[in-house]
Length: 255
Ligand code: FES
Image 1 (cartoon, rainbow, N blue to C red):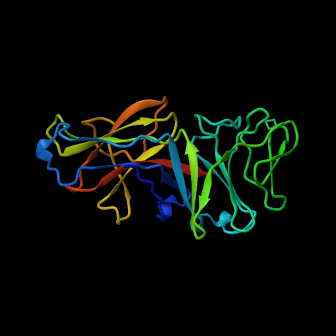
Image 2: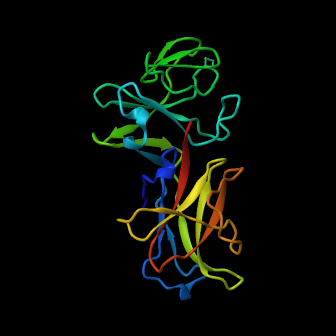
């Protein structure tokens, strides 16, 4: 099972998480630790970015635009990682466009749309694109690529990001030093994507960030994790209660 999550906490107005999955060990005790139970979640290669428009003042009105970074953006306007920022533009009558910001000329990341022209202008050589990503003029010869987007008509916007999905495997482990029982979360971390671990007691409760360790016996005091290469990784959390849901979430920054 795969869960997506929209965080509404204030500190995540600019940095929030999505594409989560969960690992639940409901009703299990820690005496059957050491990987006594392992649950593998369904694999999806697509991550769903779920935005609450109310968290983004720029998207409240027609011609609004935001740019969301999954990977850091370098000074040369290329992403440090495989993901270009995602541009979301609001058109008339509750229409939304989600675009890959990679310019189709020489791949510079283009900025959000200018509200007064409804256009995006590439900072490298000046190619111009329309609100829906179509090419208007310049050296670029084709439109920006689009992501599938769905709006619930009220406040929730969903954007499908190919290649961002991942699955989580959770297993009980006992730290070698005899400390508290831990849950190990295994997943494939994408290069330079920042992850955090969230916990919620039940599905109707709000998720909160929880600290973790990147090693089985290290202090569980990390709050963010990123890998310099795409790799299978494990994060370790100390169990907070016999039941609950642990999720690994991607952090996204508005830039
Ligand atoms: S890279 Fe955008 S116009 Fe050249």
